[in-house]
Image 1 (cartoon, one colour):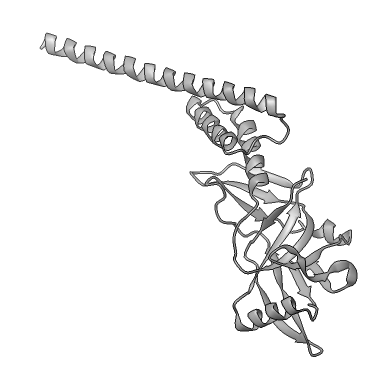
Image 2 (cartoon, one colour):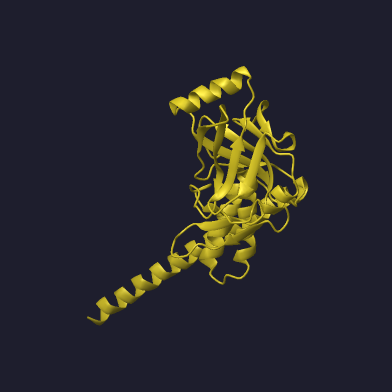
Length: 250
């Protein structure tokens, strides 16, 4: 199961607890739209998405920039507190007195570093897709995730979206079966071709099957284009004949 990382409206601040600095904030915010991914869909996190992972007491680490060498805290040691509240995934980090942790604290005091990200995997049944309406992008809702790290991040980005893009490609493929519009099916085939050409295949297919499927998709798309071109050419000739007939009658 591949890891994903996200930044969804998450910030932290620095406060003192018994004279010791503590980083507090939200590593994820519920029901907030992500930025557009792959030009075609957005993501949201549903309330309760982290509940099972927290209840299981998964071994979650707090890191800097998702670097496993820069550990700030850990749930199993009691230095990292995680819980869900009405806003999202609440985090309390009790950092060590290492040089890199002190550097982060100084950057936090100055306001240079203030955002968080979280790393996760999605178990079977942990996501839900919805078709976008009126030209809006499709929506991936994360219903349940396996949490493995929360991180203070220097550069907010949206990395590691290959898993989500593959999932969206599969969703588009399944949804197109019920569509009777040749134009819609053609556009979806093209989208899937773009995913395959970018090296983002269906996870369930082996290499040989993917190659055969890609060749078939190419031929099908070309055939559809030729059919459309043939139809337009015939229609143009028909219009010209009708005009000539009108001129002759006139």
